Length: 121
Ligand code: FES
View 1 (cartoon, rainbow, N blue to C red):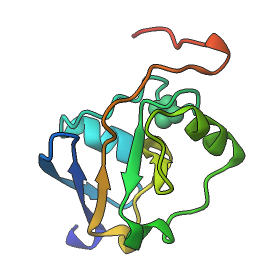
View 2 (view 1 turned 30 degrees about the vertical axis):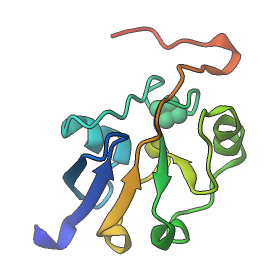
View 3 (view 1 turned 135 degrees about the vertical axis):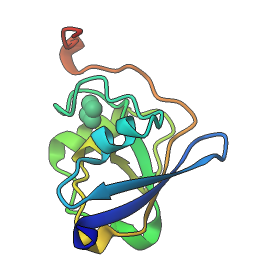
View 4 (view 1 turned 90 degrees about the horizontal axis):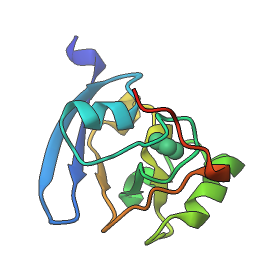
């Protein structure tokens, strides 16, 4: 229902904006993929890569749960890290996040923890 709708705007590195219409409980990575936004998510949200790296608009940063230590460690490896960097696959939509704006970094790198590469499927 409309009650459940959470609107997100994803900007890419070229300045394009994608209006992504999600709902409460959606994972931002998978939602973006459904809308064909270039958020790669190489490790399938298993917190083992940085290819879902995004910047979160400052007004929304405090509404997100704090990053876990694992997320912080991964972000440390992410190219173009900023103080508002987060991993997109760790953002679960709720009503408070309606209107959320995020931006993709200029580039991501296929970095896997411990050289672990998920099996393609
Ligand atoms: Fe790999 Fe988010 S998809 S950490």
